[in-house]
Length: 179
Image (cartoon, rainbow, N blue to C red; front, side, top):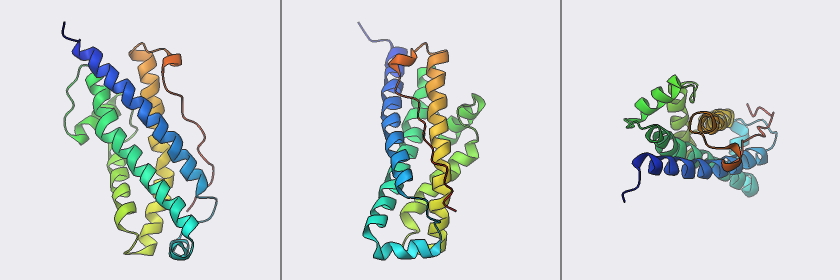
């Protein structure tokens, strides 16, 4: 007997939601480890002389990029597949998610992807731009966490998945503003 394609799609969505929950927990931890310092050009320039701080930043940037990638390239398209829809391009997926109030702003999500790229490429080139990218990424963590929590709620409300079967609701956004 051939497995039901919708069942398989929902299973892939659930598995990916579980992965994103773990990534989100790690990202929140890394964000908290950046401390309460003001991140600016001089802070970035001190990274060359502070290996521990540089390592914490590297962990944050890696986890930010990983969660953004997993959500944008896997979780959101699999959410659509679990609804019986065929995902299109990244922008199509984001626009559909925006219509369902899963993603607050599709254009912001495109900006988050660009921010991820800046975290990888701006470091060696321009300390001020890199500092700005870090501060913006720190603020954008909230967008990633909120999107995850909305998908989790959607799974309960529209896919009949019991809360006890879902990965945890993510909480714990630090109050500091690194800018």
